[in-house]
Length: 163
Image (cartoon, rainbow, N blue to C red; front, side):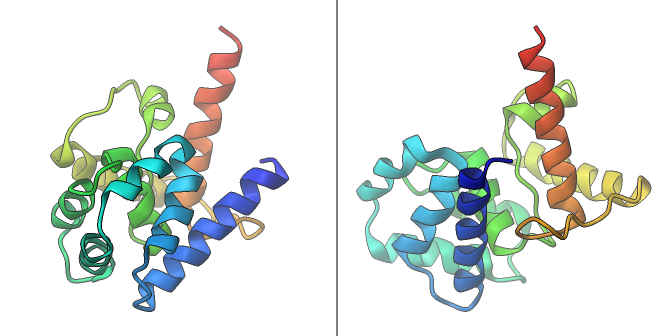
C-alpha cells in the first residue's frame, strides 16, 4: 500500500472513530468517501447536513440492523452499496467489511443488492474465523475483516494486472 493510500485509509478510520463518538459531520463522511471513491465526493454536496447527520447516526448505532444501516446510507446522493459498506467499515471495522468489485471478482460474483451485502458480510466473518485471519497491526483498523478485505482486493488487482 502506498504512503498516500495508507494516509487516506488512516484518515477514513479516524473519521469513523469520530462518527462513533457522535461527531456525525459532512467532513467525516467526506474523509471516508474520499478513501473509498474520491470521484464521488462532489456528489455529497447534494445532501443537506441534517440528512448526513441522520444517516451517520443510524449507521453508527450498534443496535441498527445491517440492512437498515446500509439502506439509510444509500439514501444519500453519491452513496451506493460499495461506498456505504466502506462507511460502515470505517465506523465499526470490527463488525463490517467493504464490498467492491475487486473482492467480489476474487470470489466470482458481481455486485448485488442490500440483501447480498448482508450475506456477503456473514460469509466474510465466517471465512475470517474459519481460516484464522489475523489482524494487520501495521495498518489502520487492524481487524481480521479488514485483513481479509485487503487480501481479496490484492488478489483481484494482481490477477487483473496479469491479464
